[in-house]
Length: 231
Image 1 (cartoon, rainbow, N blue to C red):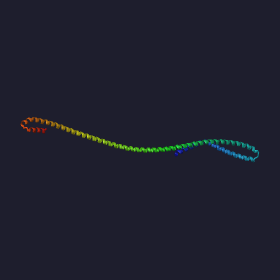
Image 2: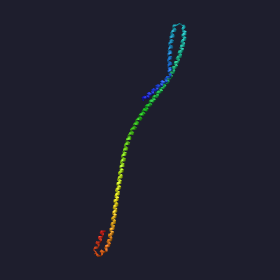
Image 3: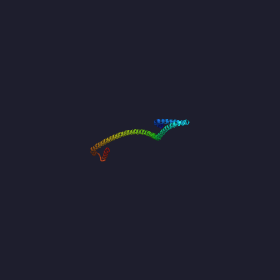
Image 4: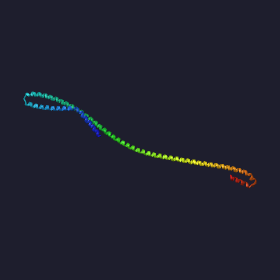
């Protein structure tokens, strides 16, 4: 803010110095005319005093000289009046310009204050956004760590599931093998039993006539019971 004020002040001083430069000659002429006017007034006073001391002869000459000096003084006075009028007009213009530039400076100052407030607001907003981004970055890091942990647990669970499935399939395979072996044994026993029954039945038929011819009536049921027990 201070550097901005210094810059504006320097520009205004440079402008005033540049705009006053063309009027340096006018001010010099005005000073010279004022000096000549004062000299003429002094000379006129001296002539008047001398005319009173001298006789009436010199009065006419002095009067003529005084009239010429008076006209010259009036001419100089008119020039001075015109110069003063011109300088007054220029002064009014400069005062109007100064007021205009003062209003512009006030406007720029208000705009600078507004921009400074806006800048402070933006800085506060930026700080808040930085804090929010930092918090979200921390949350994102925590979520990534949690995701990695869950993925590791999921991979471990899948491996355990695969191992359990493999063990279950092996158990089922072993159980199926045992069941197949049991069924094979049962089939072999059934075939063996059927073969044995057929063999015993044939032997029983072969021995029944011989036993019936040589045995008593009481021995017949006993032989039949023995055959049934063998079956």
